[in-house]
Every structure is written in C-alpha cells, then in structure tokens.
Image (cartoon, rainbow, N blue to C red):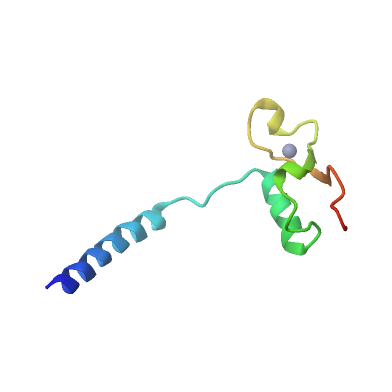
Length: 85
Ligand SMILES: [Zn+2]
C-alpha cells in the first residue's frame, strides 16, 4: 500500500540523515564569529546588527593574519550607530 511504502521510505531517509548527523563534527567557527554570537546572546548587541556592521579588532598574533581562522579574543565595535539606538 502506498502509505506504508511512504512511511518506510521516510524512516529510511531519516535513518540515513540521523547517521550522518551523528558522525558530523560540530561546526567550528572562528573566535570572532563565536564572540559576536555571544554578544548577541547576552544582549550586548542588537540582533539587527550583522557581521557587516561591526569592526572586529584582532590581536597582533591572531591566526587571521596568517590566513587562518581567528583564534584570539577580538574586540568588536559597531561601525555605525543604529538609527534610534
Ligand atoms: Zn582574531
């Protein structure tokens, strides 16, 4: 019957997807992005602020200057003040 086949198919696909999720490594994000997300979470930055609206100040030794991911504790400042803020 059609519904039974659909159910089986859906379960198979879900199983494959679940297996892939299980083995997938957690996405590793550069410190700069993680810090920005942290600032969003604690409410230090309005949600409306995007990556393109902030300046990220990296330490001199930061990996970003060697073409790697950011591994310092960057300072994040707003490029412009938000209207109404
Ligand atoms: Zn950095």
